[in-house]
Image (cartoon, rainbow, N blue to C red; front, side, top):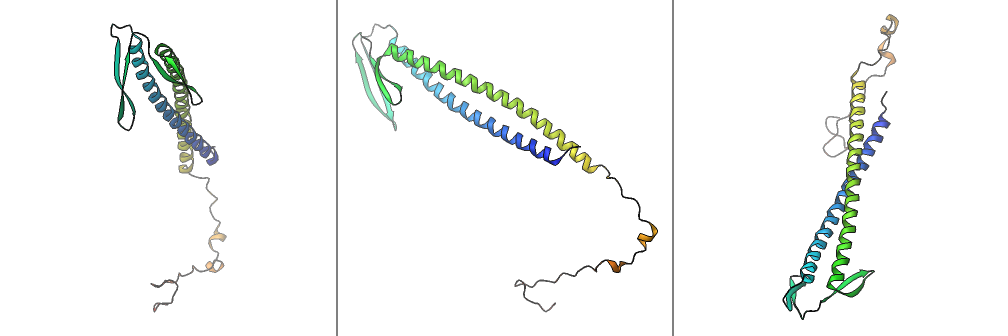
Length: 187
């Protein structure tokens, strides 16, 4: 026999799994944004460290709000970049080191993304399983409610003859006036 408590428990479980699934997908979107940023940074650093016959490099560096600063590097030596080393500490590193650091971070973030995707897949599978159980229980409960209930025995002739005096007469409801509980002409 299906109990309403079981049904409610499954409904809560479905809702919790759905919420967890949505949170994981939100994290996945955030990680994808960071991965895209790292991919751009890695490609720029790759271009800077690639052997070239050019003795100078010039570009514009965005500093935010649509503003860019001109940057130029001259000479055959490798340039330097400020790299976030963690905890708000920045260090000046050669482009090749900055490239290696950025690429390692990208790989670590990709691994995190893969783990999140695996969690999302597992949560989605659990959600589908619990939702199917919920639907099956709900259908069973609905069928139980629709099935004819155990009928009480038919009243005996003596019970049918009981006068209606034992039952109080139905109470007539008062008409309410337009202004709340005030008496009206109908009363």
